[in-house]
Figure: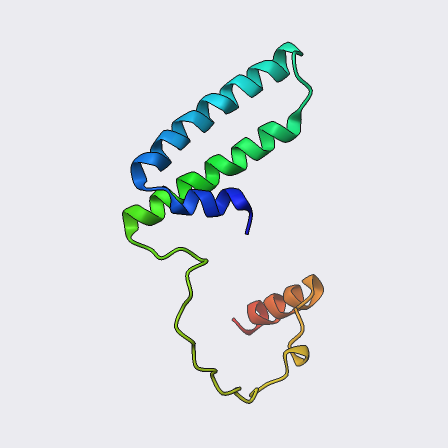
Length: 110
């Protein structure tokens, strides 16, 4: 887990919203610099966009009351393997010619 994500997870909702606003402004400045030719660092823009997405995700998770993905979860019981009733390879997709022949045969029956 990236260090930034761990830092974001420790923030409360107000801090996350402030961070979201700051990242939005940073992305605006970086895009402006790229278009005017003042900067050639696309990597910073990409990282800022990803950080903004992370912050927005965490804000939404807090709104919905969802646990974070890094939180330890209760162990899940393993499901027993079901025996396959059919072989997937035995079902082949109909070709256009086969479909046309089937359609033609249906019309002849009418």
